Length: 112
Image (cartoon, rainbow, N blue to C red; front, side, top):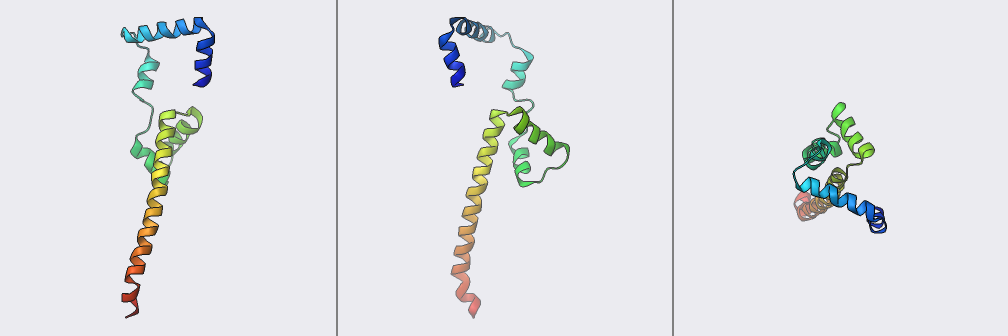
């Protein structure tokens, strides 16, 4: 994005073309690609990506999500995966701490 902004500042022709594209979009002239990207028609759901992280998907579904993330490099889905991974790590840390507290609090009862 920084490279794009730098190029726009340095070349007035590019800035003018971008303004024209934005005017067309605002006027209701849409391309198929723009509609596809805006509505994320090819993006898997957050639930599907969670299943992917857990290893619950197999075959074509798993292959497609891997392709979408690694080859296409969809920023929206990469951000979703990063968030899901972060939450997964937080939950595993919390679960470990909770189990430890339960064990410590019930250790006296186990000796009897």
